[in-house]
Length: 579
Image (cartoon, rainbow, N blue to C red; front, side):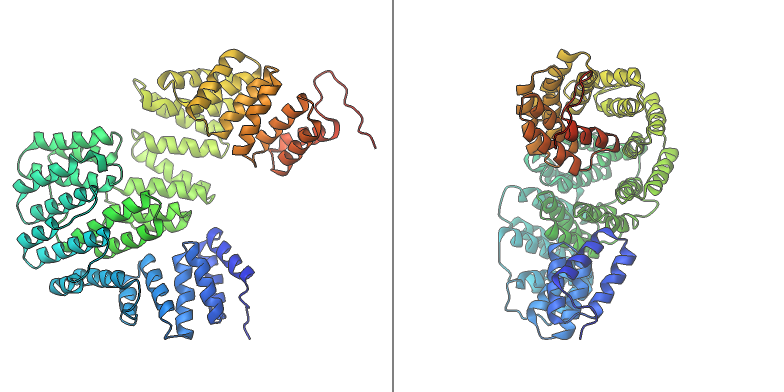
């Protein structure tokens, strides 16, 4: 008899614990449950964990399932995939030897085994493992680039390039083909030909957004090759081509700084392990961007297995866990970034953001203050610190942080709009409206089409009963810019309400409630508008819904009063509630 019968309710409870509890406490509970589950319970729990993208829990339950039923091929396949997702590639390879070849995942089993052979420098075996494989265009792309890097490792650079030339498929694949051809050429000591191929790769601007990491690495490889050839002007031109598409990307600015400092240009990719890791890094990020995080996670884990010290790969894996709303798991990857890595500050910044997400506010603030102290001219940590303080209603501290940032900006540009806007929000919450209004206006001066600022200032004016027409026009413009933003549509409805245009208010507020059905403010506003047009039963329904949606403390009394007495204007006496 099980000590802990694994009902569906208990499975869901464990899943919830793993999502919200600290890793130590959650996995202690998980291990206790795994210990006492039977085959059916373990398998069901593994399915729940897999559906929740919880690879660690899936591994634990599937290992127990396999222990209870060691010949179950389906359990082996599922555990194989869970091992891949959790980065236990060697365990996946070992398990794959017991998986029947007659299954739909035969290709991925062979691919993973070829990756392990590449890691062990067994070039010929890796080639043989995949030489007869045929599949989709994507499968063929992966197969041929892996084989190409294996041939390069085997001293067959010419044959490696010929292998890549046989790749066919969609236009976006051309960037990958050209990148890896260029990388192999550079690694072979042939930068003169590499720059021609890499130049072709970065000229494919249509694929830059989908394959942004691939495109940026093509730029990086080209810059390095040009620098090694002594073509510094051509290297700077390559960086400029990247900045034309990604003007705010730190990696590209770092390339320019390296050129200015005359730093030696090492190879971006110097061996087959790094080359195949680059392939999975390229594909993992592209798939992640399109929403396929489970597949992206496996590709990136394969990349990390081959190139564990790569900071970009580690950061990409952390990003996967952030998308899965697992901030602490993400931080476990950010912590792996070396202190001397150029990516360390980014990793610390993301760590702070994730700590704030899990309510380790002081930990987040401490990291951000250290980043600001280390490099006061870097405005990104300053902005992040100010936003955290605003979110945590520490508005006076936030003002001081934004003061320091704005003092460094000699000539504010469009990109600085947010500093003035965030300080304005802090001032407004501190009830220092005169200062807030100045900053809101300055923010709009820098970026006249910023919907959030138009909405905040317009709403504030309308709510205060000042500048009503101008405020209404601002909110209308904000709605036009962001028609699906429920909080902005609510502002428009409330502006109509303040102008006593109640029928128009109802129309907009009903739209806002459809977009934000659980927002207490929006429901409260719609209740007021319904009351004004004589729809009093519906008004009370909306007020009750607003109350159930957990409004701010100061609003609870007001809403309860409206539920008892209706909407009473200033100077009116409440109507006694009848029995």
